Length: 308
Ligand code: CP
Ligand code: NVA
Image 1 (cartoon, rainbow, N blue to C red):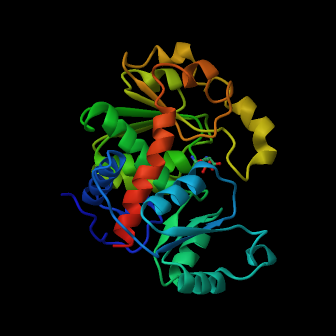
Image 2 (cartoon, rainbow, N blue to C red):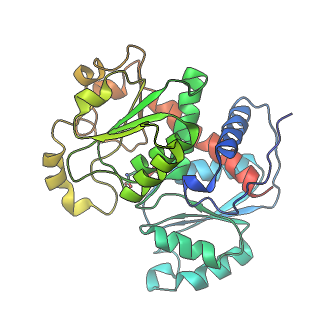
């Protein structure tokens, strides 16, 4: 029977913290959890959730994942804790990691997440930063694997903002050898550091392309992905970005230009008629709600390995 094993890295701050083999292991475990083929009990283990930004899926999927593993969670945010009053991360991390067995942090700067990891005596998980959303990418690739059985010859095209979600798709895609295309308006390309790292992993096999044309990018694609045009923290830029992203909506006409059996993914929450139409979200191509469910299964797998 498949069993969780300890990952080389104590933390999961980035998709780069896992090897290809470890990602495959997480996806296999997640599939087993989903099919009820695996029972792991982490009695008395506590996951501390520290969320500086809103969340529905990440928070609840972590809470339910932990509960299914027999553990429990504590949910903190800046208003219910001393974090909002400016208690330093190095103090918060040292205290929380004396109570909790693992911490999941959702915040703005990747450097703040790294500061938590530096001072925490327990594993730290990235539950979304401005730079990356690595747990999301695990669920995304689990969904793709469920659909296509493996990653051979899969072309994943992300149309929209080259943000945290896109960065994680690029890194996880590179580790899994999947061709990733990004189509975004000029000036909204993914992090250049992420692009360079991915090209290094791909060994410059030209499996990553960044363009400003969704129509060219979508040709021959099996997976079409998008995310909000304005992320959390960018509320004041919404009006300007809505104009700049005109032409990047995933609608039925654009979807017809992809492969016939292409699936559509979105990390959610979605703004219908902005980055994606209601028709596409509700279409037969959409796997968006399976993808949301898979957050719970991959995080159950991740927690089992980190707490092993
Ligand atoms: N996809 C995702 O992370 O959703 P939440 O912001 O609701 O957690
Ligand atoms: N890019 C989005 C993802 C939300 C899950 C954000 O950071 O708000």
